[in-house]
Image (cartoon, rainbow, N blue to C red; front, top):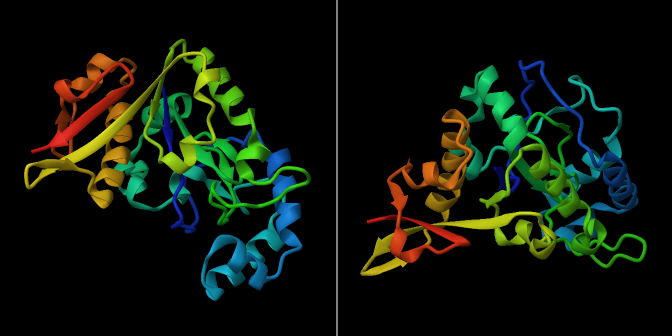
Length: 254
């Protein structure tokens, strides 16, 4: 099983004490994007990314200071750097060596700048949402830029995992960078909903945290099959068989 997560806008840039790390596989492509972004002013980034003056200025500095090779001195493991709601649920700071080893084989983080990240891949701070309409050469946006690269990498990882299950815990924005018809396996989407006034609804904060929490439980319990997923209690969300089908798993909170 390969599990997909989205990245986070919030970053924890405190130095990591973990020594084990790996290198992103699409750094050459990342450098192409950074070279394109280095030439932009803070005002240009503000308009491109729809961010504040402060965030635009911060990312001008980040892109200008971007350098390879990545080391533990200038970079940090992705799973310990991303710090949003999903990563609160994932709680990777509690992982031991066995957990990190399992996550490294089965968890993948989609990224506008790095393509596909393994949890222990080193990364430098950035802001570049997958939906950003950044023109690079003849590519009109990041979806065009990444094209089939992300899908090909996921297929390679599925083959190495000896599994045909791609479990999507990523947002629509990020999963849209994957080409499902080219995936060599079964794509399973997970949905978290709460019963409110007689209807099941997505509560954004809770659902994001639940995505990370499910990934945490998969790692901690070394889950590799769907039947084991059905038994999980994900912060009160439980598998709802009558809402689910072959490609969509619904977990609800009553």
